[in-house]
Length: 112
Image (cartoon, rainbow, N blue to C red; front, side, top):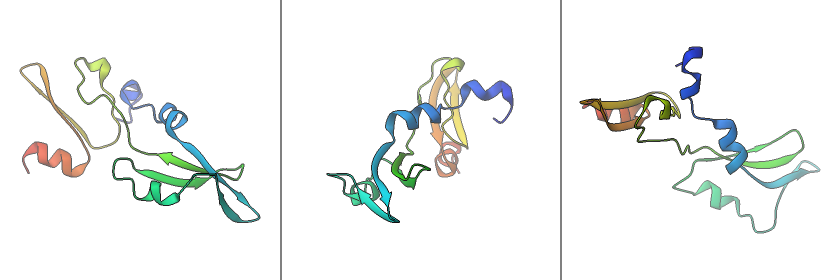
């Protein structure tokens, strides 16, 4: 996947973060100050989205959205979006059948 010829199949994490990351506060005098209406536990306890919390060089606190919305049912090779590794795409009789990302998920697809 690291070969240059495969770059077009990688999920566009930069565009994803631009779209989904949120500024949720700032660092003032070395302390975290949350924006109005922000409860950090909402991000920490979200079962559907993997959030990270980081401070940038401008002292903004950013909730980084780390759950990809890649194409999980590509019909053509050009539609493949690899969101992470390992990724497995199962083709049967020339037709897309299944998609998995992650060690456990790909092992399950292999029947291990």
